[in-house]
Every structure is written in structure tokens, then in C-alpha cells.
Image (tube, rainbow over all chains, first blue to last red; front, side):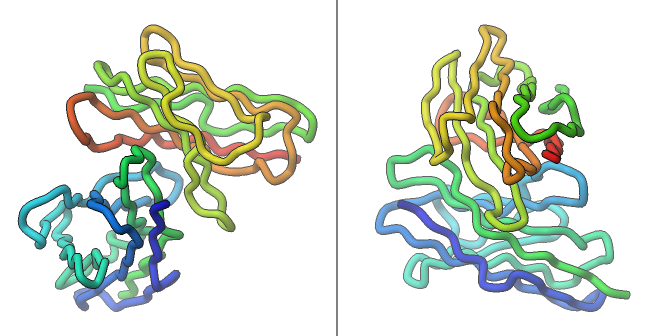
Length: 113
Length: 113
């Protein structure tokens, strides 16, 4: 079965600082990876996805992620965050013959002025 | 296109009651998945329906059930509510043709007293 580990439950940063949210997955087969964002009292919005091809994936709102198969990681990065990036971020995986989307526990990003 | 809609947005019930939640997918989407989100367990997959048939199921007791209608709208039912069923219930729809992104609705916040 697939599993996803988000290594940090909370990440506080200052505005305009860079940020990295870490995600590791466990799978012995090909997987597809996603990052979703959830703003307070809202559903999930897709930031970016890795299906195949280039390991560096660019998403919305200036976010990008790098797929590293040898380290089974898919870390999310942004070079300069804004107050409006304050939200909860979820890493998710699908694959291995299953069509179920498996989520990590989430990382709460707080951007302080 | 209109997004995924869920009704009601908020619901308060008491233990032992039952509840029905509704989800209308994006027009043309035939796959609807349901997720439960709680602070302790995070996002957990409940089930997926495709063309009125349950295609995948998560590890939830039989009190949780669902169905999908011919217009792809889906309902989720929880019988004999327990305090631990208090959660945000998210619905997601997906188009056909390969691995497509899941689009999430805003969720229904269920509180069981």
C-alpha cells in the first residue's frame, strides 16, 4: 500500500523568505504525485502534479516541486512566500495499481510579516 | 464550468441520528470520490463511484455508504452517528481518459453532539 510522510507538521516563515515543505512516499512501483493546498474553510486546490517526464514540476502561485525517485521524495518549494500563502499543504500519491489518492498528514505553513 | 458543489455546507446532528450529504460533480465528470478529514486522522479515502457503481472503497465501517445517480450526482450516508464522525467531508470529481486531476468541493462540516 502507498503511504506519504510529510516531515513537518508546521512551518513558520517570514514573508519573502524561501520555503521548502518536505514529502516522502513509499512505493516500489511507479506513482503519480500531487501537492494540494487548503485555505481555511475551503476544499483542496491542486498546486502541481508529477505524472512523468521532467522531474522539476512548476505549479500555480510560484510553487515548484522536484521528484527524486532514488530518495522517494517530492519536496515543494517557493523562493519567496507571501502572507497569502498561509494555508495547509498536502502531499498525495496515487499508483501501484490503485486509483485511491493517499494523502500525507499535511503541513501548516504560516507566513509572518 | 461550475465547480464541485456540496450541500449542505454545515450540519449539526446528535449521536444515533443519520445524515445524508450531497455532491454535484463538474459537468461531464463521471467519477466522484469522498474523503473524511479530521485533525487526528487527516484525509482518509471513503469510496469512489463511477457511472453509478462503487469502484473503490476505503477502510470505514458499514455505517458509511454512498450512491451515485445517473446524472453523476452522489450522496453519502452515515447511519447511527458517533461523536468521532465529526469531520469535514470532501467530495472530489474527476474526468475520464487517463489519470486526471481530482477537483474538490468546499466540503460539508459535520458536527455530532
